[in-house]
Amino acid sequence: MTGAEAARPALAVRGLPRRTPARGGAQAQVRAGVVGAYAFTAALARLAEARASGALYGSAGAVYLRDGAIVHAESPCAPDLGVRLMACGLLSPDQWREAVTTASAERGVGGHLVDTGRVARGELELCHLLALFDAAYFTLLPDSEPDRFQPGATSRLGPISRAVPAQRVAREAQRRRAQLERAWPWDDTDAGPVVPRSEGEVRGGRARAPTPGQLAVLAAADGSRTPVQIAWHLGRSAFATLLDVRRLAATGRIRMPVRAQAPAVPAPPRPAVPPMPPVPVPPVPVPPVPVQAAPVPPPRAHGGPQPAVMPSSDPSVALLLRLRAALEARL
Image 1: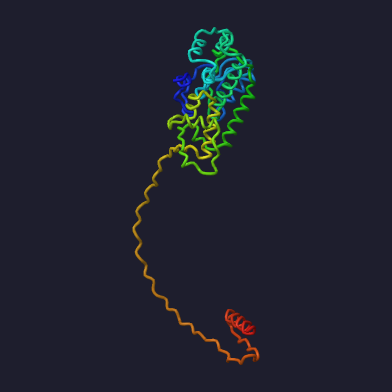
Image 2 (image 1 turned 30 degrees about the horizontal axis):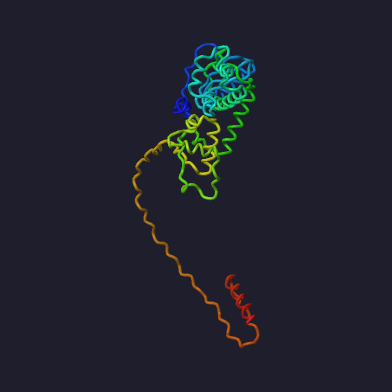
């Protein structure tokens, strides 16, 4: 079992465990006037405007601020920095555990890795920024709610990369949501198990060849892993895995999860109504209508004069007589 496997949570995008909200003034300040969709994003914007420093905890993760800018983000849905470093071969699980247990509070885990020569600073900063934006996408989901703000709280990783403006992180989260919508507009694939289809079930010429990332997702899909669990298994971006899964769904390479349907509510029974007795209808006599046959003109010799069109009170009969006379004139 790899380090990423050992650290993988049994979580899906939906149904994340909620933190126990704190009581008191800080909780009230965070949640005051922040309700409904994008509540976490609104609370983050208020803290950024106030140039606050600390940690904002929510239902889908946490964001760490320094002077109103974001220095770190974490979410149970996104593989953390350690998983990414182990997945790309820069660290072993033992080396990561050693850094976490022995790093000082001043330098943090990131500073310890650089000081000991385990990881180059450029590699560490790149992996950290990728992990930051990946976790921020989930913490800023529309239905994510803020729980509490802890002033002065810092991440155990310590200062690694430059702080990112909160507005830029929010714009990137919005761009990623739009990208998922363009790839496949239904989010049922985000939380359900990924079940690949066989080659015979895939739609023929319209299905594009999978990309290397999609092939890795298909190889890791065992019928029970969700996209988030596949991301932890592979040690790659959770958002990139969601995007690959939606694109696979658009090409018919995975089965769509069955959406739970609410049981049908039976209609209330109608009151019993006694049948109405049949009403006798007396027959109405219809007087016979006399039919007068139209006079038949005498036969004419070939090439003789044209017969006169017999007058008739019925316009339909008159029209038929005129058509017959026109046809006979052409014979």
